[in-house]
Length: 239
Image 1 (cartoon, rainbow, N blue to C red):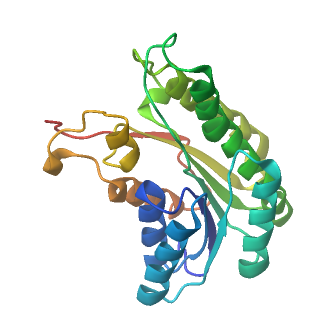
Image 2: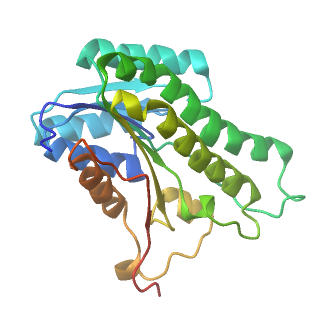
Image 3: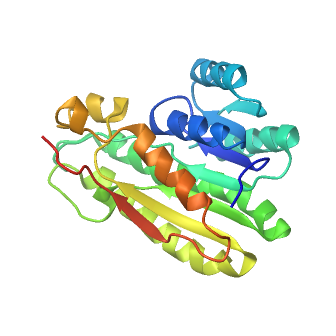
């Protein structure tokens, strides 16, 4: 399917996986709404995209744990770009510690960003997709949303929730020609992984944000009659 002229909203678009997805979609001719908490990161990405592609770029800074901020940001982007064909829920945070050693505030923050943030953005975008009777929603989960591990209780709980939310929403809206997908990569070479102290191996073997972006584009280009429900992405030979 040709993506030229489509409009996509990407959360967490200021860096890492979100930025890579924005670049990849711009190469396909997709107009972009970029949402993140830090305006300076968004401005840099938008500037780079405007200089290297002919697509429209709209940015909005918002804390996705704040429902009113999210609704205002989505309205602002939609007013500039028009109706949204694609939503990529990418924004997320993570930290790792034994359950009883992680401060409750940190545990709650992970759930607020990863689960409620995804819910708030989806809730703001979904009515427009239902009205136009088509759309694509891609939720970036994690392999940690398919299996737990020691010290990942908060992060895994949030990503398991995303997998369940994706499955249930898919069943709700597939008759509206809305495709809902969960992508579950293993560790990606991002700032989140480095700050969390995760072992990501040698540079040439690491999964890169661009690898996840490539899968996003491939899923969107499938014929509208089919979609990827869930997909894992792993490093071939981690070192």
